[in-house]
Image 1 (cartoon, rainbow, N blue to C red):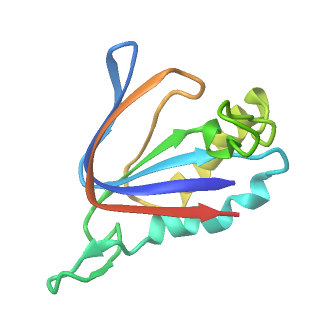
Image 2: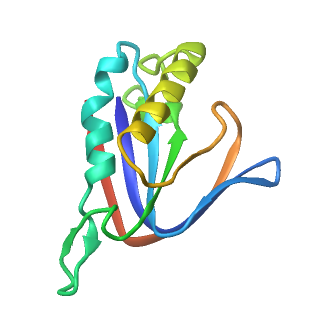
Amino acid sequence: MKVVLQRVKSASLSVDGEIISQIGKGIVCFVGFKNDDTEASFALPAKRICGVRIFEDENGKMNLGIGEVQGEIMLVSNFTLYGDLSDGYRPSFTASMKYDEAGVLFEKFTQYVKSQTSLPVKTGVFGADMQIVQENDGPITLIIEN
């Protein structure tokens, strides 16, 4: 399981021109599953997402957690996180979990994250062609991998 986490000032996610999700200050998390991931893979990434301290305190240091700034979380499924370009220019996705299995796991992961925080948790639409507009803050981008 891999999560690419980005600190944002705001983000919105649209499908077919309709805004499905939007958040203010918070984090956008692109979530990908590899073939052998299971629900046992959830604990560490969820803990990091809900507790990440990447927001600036009164001294300008990244010391505040997302809860302390009343941030929001957006989870976006992203199978391309396991794309492999080692053999050329066209990515191979053989390490990415199959569509149906990944959809089930993403829904369970979303519910798990929601159970770990009182913060708003928004999502996109699994498998849809999503357009995401985000105002990155920093930019601060971190990778969580299990």
